Length: 133
Image (cartoon, rainbow, N blue to C red; front, side):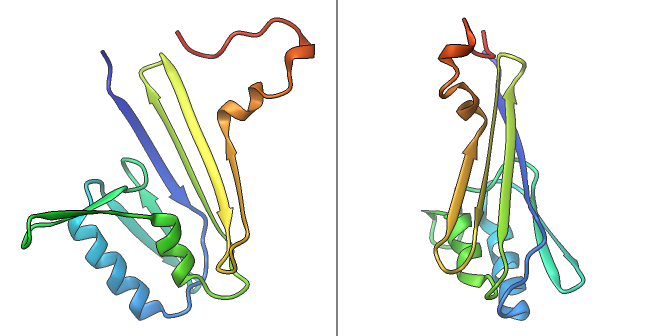
């Protein structure tokens, strides 16, 4: 049995309060199970997820863990008029590939795409197996 590995990142986006956002990312980096790198360029931020977007936060002091909603976290910090796009790709060796992308703003607008969406509505093309074994 192979392990699943993923990587992800965002585009560059603007935030409401740079100091608050940087402090919250630094705090998040300490307790998530996967590394986060923050990149700043021209007043915009991008987040790089070496092992995919984190899904939990562990507090060593209290020995408690909490779910992490990266999309919600970013949405709360997004500046008006800025859009964040998060993308993640992963694979379990070459048994199967997975990927998704989501774009959102701080007003609740959201669009998501999954790689598997390619299979929807192609029955008329002919016989089609999935890209996995």
